Image (cartoon, rainbow, N blue to C red; front, side, top):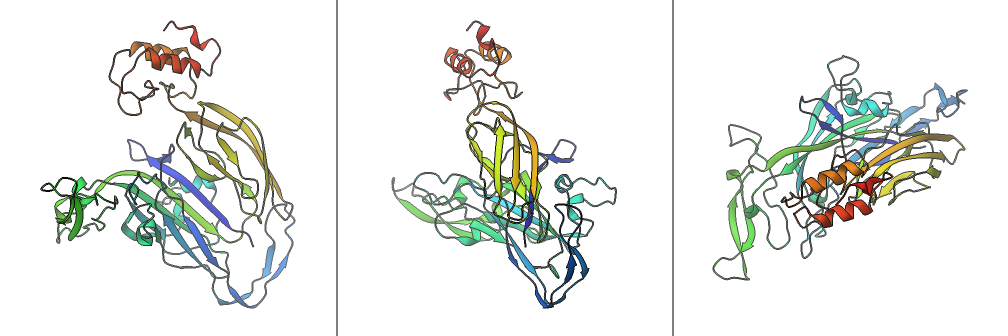
Length: 396
């Protein structure tokens, strides 16, 4: 039995509309599946349509229903030197109350109401509810599993053919420095007020002990009681993952790939899903420099090292012999691409030249040497990275 897991990232635009978004650090759910226990096996026949599952003539009698438990890990971010925790963030989990046999197409997981039923399409036509209001996640090496991931409740899937869908929304942690343990980087205000009768909604809850620098003894630390209710701890919406799980699905490929950024890890993306693993996956054409597709898992991963628009072809065969293939375009931007059109050309060089002497903000694509100012050194580095012919004809 294969597994089918779809993950799609979204953002909200200025009008509040949900749409495909750029690369951001958000977690990708994992699933633990417990197959059903049957009193007797189902009666099935082969499906005459290639790459589709068998046709069930008479379903088996379920003695113990299948179950799946979804877990969302903390976003993968670097843990600073000498610390034990990475950057904190909040996750809010929304799931469907009931489940059905429908398998959603990848573009339906974006969240828009394309069918006009007043429900986001990711809910698969079922009512949704908040499963977890706010949970603080932090990548850590201290063994704090509660902050490393959030596991949901087990979902019954009857004979295994039900589809489970969830939306994971990520928000910034904005508690001030005094709420962060100065020694290991742990965010200590890890609960959020949701009842306006009990306090300010969005602020922390309770008093916690936080290790801070001791102002009376330089180089020493001390434990200070901090009243979390005095601080807002939930900040801006970062992005979301919509996840769908069903236990039987045909071998398929994702419809599209999100853009990447030079020097930033590309979120692991399952290009191939469904069918029966392991796969044999190959690619041809221009896979972005720094990225690779794992043959057995069909997973695209790595860190892009070059700006550009990359076109490539992927083909995969599962263990049952089913074959799927697709052409992809993946865009990568980065330092030097000042207009973010996924190339570095004379227009970008002209922009850099026009900024000579200006102070650059963090991550300004015109500041290629990261010294927070724009000068001829940035120009020369951008010229060496040109992706278009005759790019360097602009005079420095």
